[in-house]
Amino acid sequence: MKLKNMPIEEIELLSYTDLTYLLLKENNKSMNTPSIFKEICNLLGYSDEEYTAKIGDYYTSLTIDKRFVLLDNNEWDIRDRHSVELIMDDDEESEDVEEVEEEIEEEVPEEDLDVIDDIDDDMDDDMDDLSMVEDEEEEE
Figure 1 (spheres, rainbow, N blue to C red):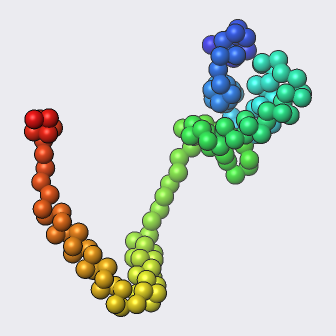
Figure 2 (tube, rainbow, N blue to C red):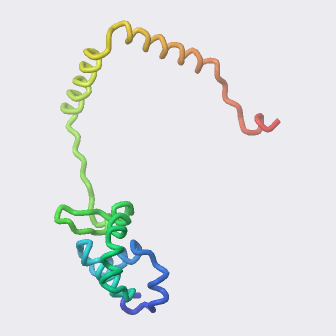
Figure 3 (cartoon, rainbow, N blue to C red):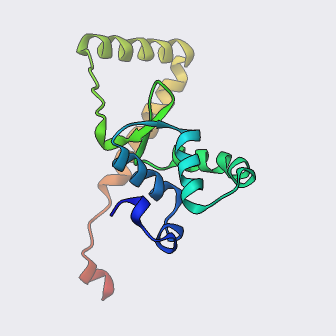
């Protein structure tokens, strides 16, 4: 059912972010914050003063909700319509790791590295002494 055809009682039960999701889905296009919230305020019968007072909180709720993505043109859209492609170059990754390792070696004195190794060894020894207990055994 379209938002415009919904009874006001049903619309009032929805959160701003739910209304935003429905608006973006119905319009099938991205929209900026003021446009979306103005439509929501019109649906709910809010005054211009209420619009002004609530738009900041509305923007915050959009940034928190994982269903939405803010595009480069400062418009919101449904995240499902957009994909992110991560391309990792193996050469760059290994160079970055080597650089970090070199920086750590330069910053940490040799005797501190020995202490860290000793702590790691002690932790490994402690882990060897642990045993797994099944839930049933634990209750007895």
